[in-house]
Amino acid sequence: MRKVYAVALLCLLSCLMSAQAVPSGQLSFSALNGPFGSTGVDIYGTYGISTYGSLREDNFIFPAANGSFFGGSYQYSLDKYVCPLLVTTNISCNKFSTYVNAGAGVGRTTIGNSATNHLGGGFGMGILYDPTGMGKYSITLLDLHEERLAFDTVKGFTTIASVGVNLGFGNNSLASAAKLERVRKQEAKKLKKMQERAAKANKS
Image (cartoon, rainbow, N blue to C red):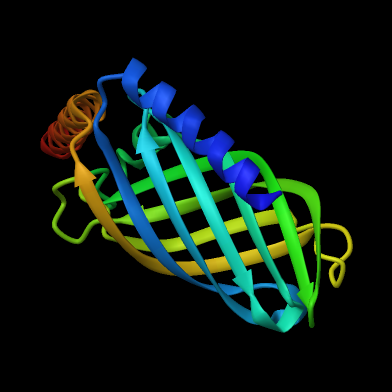
């Protein structure tokens, strides 16, 4: 069953990739805090399909819960909304990026020689960090999910928090151009506010 969903998702990814000329993405490795406060791992990948949108595929593995979850989701960058809010702060839009996502998948519970599969899904949000300010987000500061993992050992929704490292590949030219424009506007607004404050100080 899991192989069927994997093949279906790969086919969808292939179709969307061929339809959009946005060759960019990342492969991420995250340490998790999940069911029962247990540790786990999420190996996930994203592929940019528009200026702000990406396809995402997650592989949650929780040994303590005898479960794994394979899911696909749509991820949307919030930078065009968040960056204007940072104009009066010392936080650079070049170094931080925020996002939200939502999707569905298959949870698999394996106990001994017995295994069961159930449909699940959820939503999440996160913050990425690039210490170089070049738009290559190599660190996930927070990836927070509310997921129905569909494990036999875990009922209802589970809060999952993680941090991790990202390996980027390709370059989303649309996203890069949009980010440069946002940063340019942010710097221009900062300069204008500084000039206004200086003018007021000179008058007083």
